[in-house]
Length: 202
Ligand code: URA
Image 1 (tube, rainbow, N blue to C red):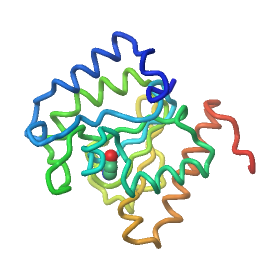
Image 2 (image 1 turned 120 degrees about the vertical axis):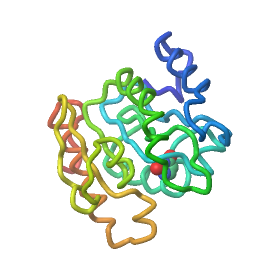
Image 3 (image 1 turned 90 degrees about the vertical axis):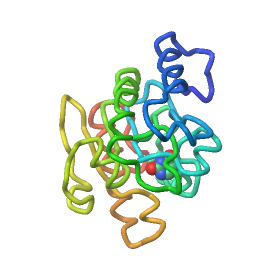
């Protein structure tokens, strides 16, 4: 079910979660935010896509990945026949870090309770972690993103795929095939798990 299409179908549990996000003052980022950026896509998707944190466009619109990175991400998702019903997009932190800096460890830690609640509500099977910061804070892994990207991590019955952040690809196009491959692997995993029909050209 996509929230953007049917927000009146929200359950009390979801509403409670949204209210907690909107009321959150657990870290400094809440002081400078325009909006709390919670998600876009479906509220019961098999795939959760996790970025690092909202940028200026996201803070303004209250939706994740709506700037240039989001455009690239959406193009890739569409090319693999993934629609809004298949994914739930969110971030490690829900409020914009000033000057587009990376979220700090204490900010990611403060936001974790909300991300954990979100995962419990969405119940995804597959995660796509966008970039080094999302990988580090989501898994506590210390390896560089170029080492771990493209390799599945299996944990608690979840399948986790770290990959490059689209913003990095926009700066260095040579890595685009790898991002492409990683999203393809995610697409294949959804089919393998019976959560999405096979790609039409496969
Ligand atoms: N980059 C992110 O990591 N998240 C967004 O929502 C936008 C850009």
